[in-house]
Image (cartoon, rainbow, N blue to C red; front, side, top):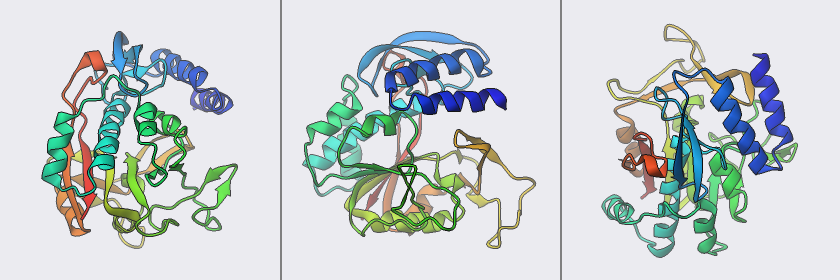
Length: 300
């Protein structure tokens, strides 16, 4: 546990120097994190828009494929490309439905452009993007966009939504502080499984999105089971054991409350969303090393 803690301290020291932080993340992941095999590849990165060196583990393509220049893994690169497409489409098309959006996503390809350059091109003070995370390649890039808001969740009962702790905004997805109909694009990446009551989070996300606003997100999904909770309404464990995922902010890891399953789209539709899965074709030359299922939910 000592090495990850030291690594996190170094990352924090380098947070004002993104390129140095990316170099550190790259070499740390490539040489200190257990790997089935260490492979390197020259490829285009759709996150930073540059020709770059990638490190990947063939047995963990989703969370490796890290870019040496921006730290984007395969999952982040796929998310970045979809965010770019959604940003351009939403800017030009005010009225969207599932079928129209999916067709437009298939026609647009912005792999050669960086995420921040595409977002800045819309030059709109009214286009607001929110991600409940201050870490990761997406958040690091979008910080340069003036209408981007990010936050973290601190388990402190005294904290209120919209307050700041050490310059970091606090938000609880189960009780957001944003006004209704105020967000154009909301991004969550492997977050909702760690929310104690995801039903409240879905209701809040629906509330704060503008009409035709979009929630684009990833969660681990079991394709063979329906969604289930690890705890009952009183917080008592009802499964065999607790599950934790690695979390750079918490040494004990992030507790998993929900395992989402094959019924995820049905669940989303109950809250008023029109939702579908979308993924980008595997293309190693553009850093898409495996299929990443991303869920896109439109506020009806």
